[in-house]
Image (cartoon, rainbow, N blue to C red; front, top):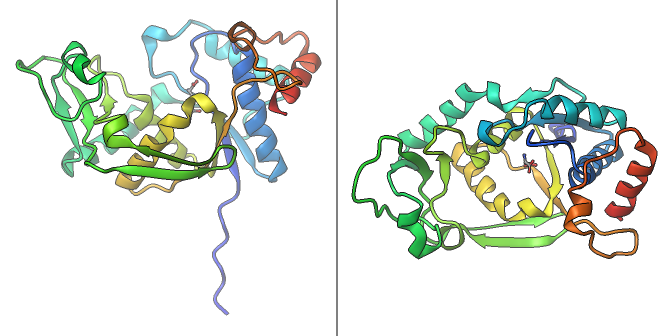
Length: 258
Ligand code: GLU
């Protein structure tokens, strides 16, 4: 009898951007993905998404990692830093450029104001020295997926998002490209994260398909609620986690996850 291939083990991840101290909303996402990974008997990784130096805060990465460790959330493997992975993003971008799926764009933000920032064709009249690189999204690119929390979700990437940026005009890598390259490189099977990223997922699935990478399962956690189903205010969600008191914090995160 031929051996059935073993399904890949469950591997989840938490991918904070080091833009400040870990806030409660992020902790809930971290705790949620950790719980799902442990429940499945799988692994859980931390990846630092330090792709945007202008928005980064010195010491934030160390502070976030220390806070996570205090509440018992530690990466099962080395902590990956996106700032060290430029060659991988370059390789992916080069493939998309070579296939004609990516292109240099000289449009300014103001030139795209008429279409609310949605790029369908270049409207720039002059070349700029720092073009961005975008993914060409063909007409009728409708991407759907089954979210473990939200159910079926569908987006027409062409009309709702347009040709999106892979490398910014300032030379930094776009989140969408880096997250796809790294989720695949780390063998992530399950992405559990906040619902604010739900509408990024079709873009990521599109990129996975174009690059021939596997699509993980997705679960987008609802916006924070207190233990009684009331939505948590922005300031509560944005409050830094008090690492001196891990137990009450975890209890609150548990309640928020419902
Ligand atoms: N780095 C992103 C953030 O902090 C999260 C990316 C992800 O989980 O895909 O919002």
